[in-house]
Image (cartoon, rainbow, N blue to C red; front, side, top):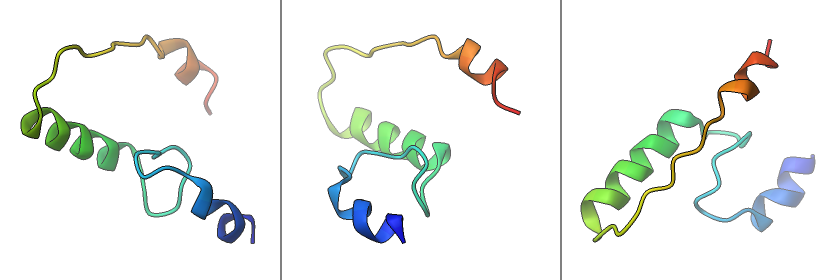
Length: 55
């Protein structure tokens, strides 16, 4: 029920914890964005410790 309420508020490039969207979809969108647009920078984030807490 909450998905129906909040789904319209999410931005199109939001992939975390959304139905029908996952990490592979995010990577596909990133690949399309990088190849179709001039990219000046890419941000690299270390999220390794996050996955230590996920069962």
